[in-house]
Structures are given as structure tokens and as C-alpha cells.
Length: 235
Picture 1 (cartoon, rainbow, N blue to C red):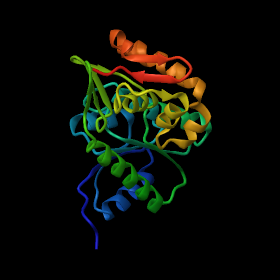
Picture 2 (cartoon, rainbow, N blue to C red; picture 1 turned 90 degrees about the vertical axis):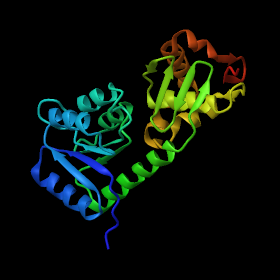
Picture 3 (tube, rainbow, N blue to C red; picture 1 turned 120 degrees about the vertical axis):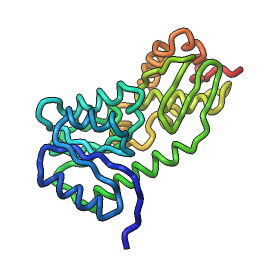
């Protein structure tokens, strides 16, 4: 018996047999599936009716998958949609590029339909759990974990995944001081591959500098505690 999940998934791939395979298996599991074969169609479909998740191939004609990801992440209406990249390009540089653009997961071809479905369910479950987390307000900052969005006044602050995690971690306990190692662990999240290689105690300082710059005058809320680490200034 199939459990109806009602989640809408947009699948983007220029290979018809891949589209049919993914569509068949996801529909069998109760998902509502829309399939498109180009980057332009993917952006238009995501804008027109925001799906709950996007399965996105990287090697698309014209506008490729990375550019699709950039465009969707640049728009307030679509930046929250989780993206799982599905591609034959399994090199380290491609994986890192996708994850740094905000992809929630990365599956290489050839793939098992059952494994892909399980990975998609895990991403959707994480997204649902995050959506139930409380919105945090610290001074002029509003942090929405579910939408992965930070606003200051009426403006949205564009943060990377690691920057968002660090700020969210600090904002959960304003005034508390956290070591660089604690912030490394916060920045890692579930992206162990990227974190083990690219998030270190030294790179935390770089993330903090970037956070302060992006927050503008509100960047002063992030205070350095010499010899210890950082804290977010409380009210």
C-alpha cells in the first residue's frame, strides 16, 4: 500500500530515460512529480509553483544546474527550496561547488531509485523539522531556521549555509561565549564531506569576518572574546 505524501517534487534532467525512471519511482511512493528537461524550464517551474524539493541534474544544455541553483538561491521566493543534485559529475570540485551553492544533498549516477527516494525523504524530513524551530529575534536580526533566512529591518541578508549555521548557533544563546571548535561543529551541520575538509577552527575567523561584513552596521553584534571565541551581543 502506497502512503500518499502529497509533497511536490520538481525533477530536472535532459535525459528522458532518467526523467521517466525517477518520475515512476517517486510517483509510486506517493509524491506529486513534475519533470522538465532544461535549466530555463526548471527556473520557470520553480517560480510558478514552488515545489517542496528539486532534483537537479548539473549537466544541462544552456543554463546548467549550478546556474539554476544560483538563480533560485538569489530569489526570496525560491531560496528556501531544498535542492538535491543528481549527476554523473562526481568529482570533488563538483560536489563542493554544489554544496557551497546551498544544495541539500548530492547523488551521483548511476544510482539506486530506492536510495534516491530515501535520500529525498531524509532531506524533506530535515526541512520539516527545521520549519518547526522557533524564529529567533536578537536586536534588529530575525532568524528563521525553516526558511534558512536572516533579515535585518526589511532586508534579507544573503548568507552561505555555514554562515547561517554559525549565526543561528550564536543567536540561540545571546551573550554566551563559544569557542572556535564549538562553532566548527555548528557550521558542519550534516555536510560532513565539506566540513571535514573546509571548515576548521582557522576558517571560523574567515566566516565571522564575512558575517560581519554582510550584516553591515549590525555586524558589531558579533563580539570577539580574546583567547576564547565569539558571542552574539544580547539585549
